[in-house]
Image (tube, rainbow, N blue to C red; front, side, top):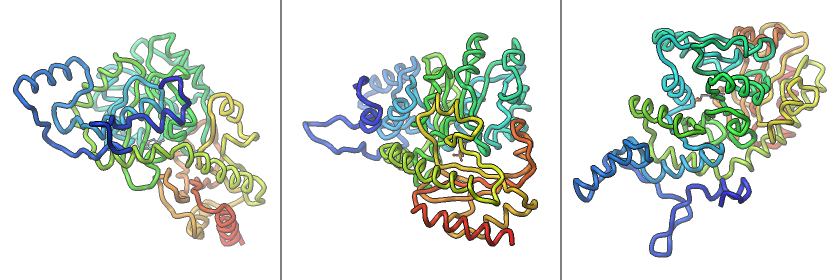
Length: 393
Ligand SMILES: *Cc1c(COP(=O)(O)O)cnc(C)c1O
């Protein structure tokens, strides 16, 4: 099985075993709060196996067959050792931070990460006595920033609004040499176009809410780790936080995963067409999409990624501060909204204060982020065109 192609393995990971020679293609939705035992001895044996680190459920919170199948599929997707499920992408990030950090610890975070991480920093980590330091992978030398008390390097590539591609193998090598684990938010690639664990990272985080579930109807996150030691740390904190997700949501993500490569390939095709069209548009100053040869991250993207997703940002050329909001208001097929990764197109004005946090880009033009969905591109381009006309006359 392990020498089969990636598509094959993703499609068959977590498939249910046949009982009495027959069974369904998909794992059933197994909902439960209580796990029933045939005897006191069966209960105790399971509890002991669980305490020893084995993935067996002794209570509904741990999840049964549906959850296990999704964990297996995510572990396969990321090429990891074990996956943990969380109720949202943000809760997966917080789980990982709480599992690895304690009072007096220092964590280095790339300055372009998903914005709510900065709220976790100010509202939770600071209170716990953790020092968070933001650094620019484009400007700073990671080696000189790592201190004896640095317990984690946390990265996101490409970054959330401007899709800055980081040199993950290099950053991971610097951290590893100093014994510091590296976690990467891998939501942009859906886990399909990038496997951070193969590039030297130790933890990969997914907001399964986005491309994995893929239909804008589930909130979910996952933490995938590369070793038994990290699995144990995440498992302890996961248990302490009482994190649980419903079996129906686990089922939806598993169903989404089976078509992830197909959907991503089409998102890439549509987004590339939109990005190239934006590049030629007289009202556009710059397009952010690493699959474009002109993008500063293109060479790294080409080396480390096998594709690009549906997210494309652009900056206006000579427009005022309100251009972004006038533009998104004028769109018809693109809805205004944040949680991308579904089949549909979305647009969002990038908040200027977020862009200023990102040292690799200090322009002051209005920036709009598009999620290019699976609609016909001629309709999307016509929609963008009429919005440009209405925005600047
Ligand atoms: C959306 C997102 C998250 C958070 O996921 P939720 O499920 O919305 O909590 C984390 N990281 C990135 C890069 C995201 O885009």
